[in-house]
Amino acid sequence: MVRDVIGPVVRPLDEVVRDRMSPVLREAGFKRQGRWFRRENDRGDVASVYVQPFRLGVHDAEFFVNLYVLPKIWRDFTARKGSSEAMGLWQDRLRVPGRLPLRADHWSFDLSDEAAGRLLTDTLAARLPELLALLDPHVLLDYARTAPQAPGRKITVHRGMSVAALLASLGPSDELDRLLRELAQEPGGVLADVISDFVDFVPTWVATHRPSP
Image (cartoon, rainbow, N blue to C red; front, side, top):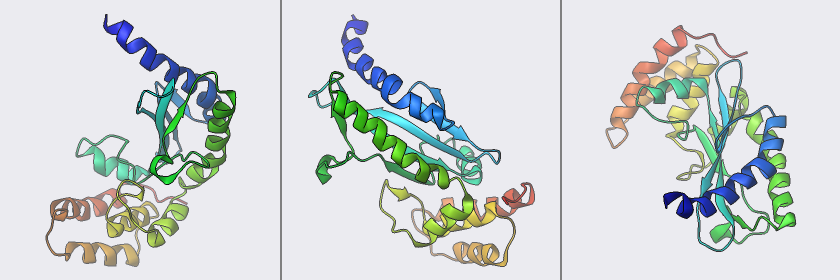
């Protein structure tokens, strides 16, 4: 009985993942596990793509495409708290070209809609160079220094923490030491315990990891 209810909901989306997304992602070096795709570099930094179902009951396949970048240092820090890779230091969603802002990131089409399927493949392929470029800590650091912060988009954590994490990936520096001192002196708030844990964590992590080139 459960299979009859779930089947029509799950199967069309998995066909989209298999036929429209998996080939281009595998070509770019991603490995698939269900609706997750991951690419990990030699340093342990991860770029991932997750296909998140979100049905309105209009078309066969309705979903978001979530994009994440998780530097090694941020993976190690958040793993201490039991967080998943969905807690990327950088994250965004794949937008539907031409869609109105209210649903600009919601993909919704029938399996028979060849044009919509091609649009998904082409849009994803066009976005991958940016996603993979952000695996370079220098590139992500430049972005973190200047990017506006918005809930659930782009740089998703306290700016000082994101910059410090990426500086730490590059090894010891006077700037990193200064930033950690500033973070330690920030007034208490909802992030006080997290920031304190982070400030304690970074020096040990830097001492035990080889800097990124």
